[in-house]
Image (cartoon, rainbow, N blue to C red; front, top):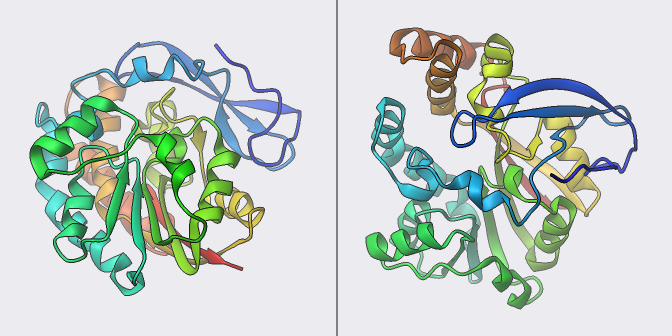
Amino acid sequence: MEELKSCPICSGKEFRPYKKAIDYTVSKQEFCIVSCKSCGFKFTNPRPQESELPNYYKAEAYISHTDTSAGLVNKLYKLVRSFTLKFKLNLVRPYLGGKLLLDIGAGTGAFLNEVQKKYPNVKGVEPDQDAAQLAFEKYGLQLLPESHLNNLEDKSCDVITMWHVLEHVPRLKDRVEELSRILADDGIVVIAVPNYQAYDATYYDKYWGAYDVPRHLYHFDKQSIELLFSGFGFKLKETRIMPFDSFYVSILSEKYKNGKNNLLKGMWIGLLSLIKGLSGNTSSLIYIFKRK
């Protein structure tokens, strides 16, 4: 295990225990989440060594890498995916220009495939070889390894998207610095991450599905992600909610809490969380950043 000695955002040296959560997907191990005393940022600590992290993704239930339909939660996820893909495309469409759309952490390629139907100038990066192979088999996409980011020219991307990816990146500041380098002056970075301040996170506490330790190395709220990006010359342009995630995460959390599926209860808590978070505090949030 690797134990961080400084906060990934502000470099503060003192942390307080925040919560303990279990990896329900793969290892069934318990992991600690700590809170930085200086800036309040929450992160998993200690965490697996970077070389060990791929082992925590090897599960049929991990839909972003397997595109599985196994289980009730994954069936529901795929049922609404066609809507969410169109929502994401419409979100980035106004910013698509003569340069590149880059999707980092493209998974099995569903979003990138939706974009390339309308806009062919796209690239995707995916470190998991199995997921990249599925993207090729399903959509003919040639996803690139993470090392390809180093080969991209400065200011070469109109749009950079990371859909529920930033929370997985071991070297957080290095990644945001790289985004700043390759983004065009008038481009945007679109970041979607879970939001631990949502009602369903409070309700389910340590059973909240979007803690997803240890795959989720960081646990963001609006304040912490804005602080991170402002340090690299970005300003927050807009925040959008991801309405379906409240239901998906609540159904998953209900299973973790009670050991069985309870669709109606999970849907009810998801609906409450969505209603309470309509002003901008739902289970997952989309942050759109531009240069200052």
